[in-house]
Length: 333
Image (cartoon, rainbow, N blue to C red; front, top):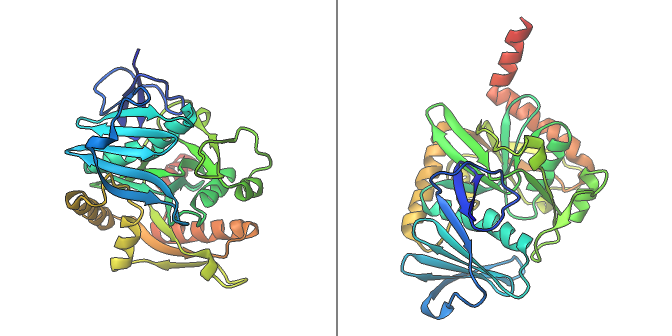
């Protein structure tokens, strides 16, 4: 029996459970997911287009194409066949367990499919601050996006997502919507931000990060889109000198565009039409706001409070009172 779920602003129909996602009523599904039998997907009819590698050079995934179909192969763990109409077939390998298969599906395959449909999905973390402003953090893996978002969350902010963010330019600005609320942290950050690691679990053989799902914090429902006030691009922490203050500077022009394009999900980076769509979407998002900044600070968990204060001050200065703050003020009056 198929079940219907919500991720971002779409409905997913799946023939196996996706406990990370809130349930949705039956309807028209933008993505349909099924489990394929081991060995049922033959790679021989596909042509390899590129390899997805980790920083040290090891291959994480091989990506192949056959006409309009794509095959993502995570050797030893799972293969995913993406067909026309949003059909994603998940074939487990010898070492692929259910959590691993779902993680790759929800955090990689569905965002990449949405990108192929002209949506702007960024590899980013985002929170709505206590003052009502919403900010997002971009940057290469390992630069502290999840740590910073989790630190804000531990001090009262609402976590939107710490991995995937859907941006939608509109008449009043750009809204941000997460896939599902969860925290993924390396062990050192986990112990620095949280008092204990209860509820965290390993979710991927490709990373030592631990994951904590926050589904209960939003009552099992999809959070509403939030207007995005600022994007902070995290620079290389190694380039920050010992004891240097937190640095926040405006990011404009080609540097701003390239910072966003480097964090945009893409099904096929060799597809010129898809790349053109991403550039167009990023241009529209930048034209509507939010403000972009370069954020640099020394990687020191003891200075996270200082970073939070600097970010809050920056956003308050540029964005002014948030709508929620204005509503609170009116109620007091």
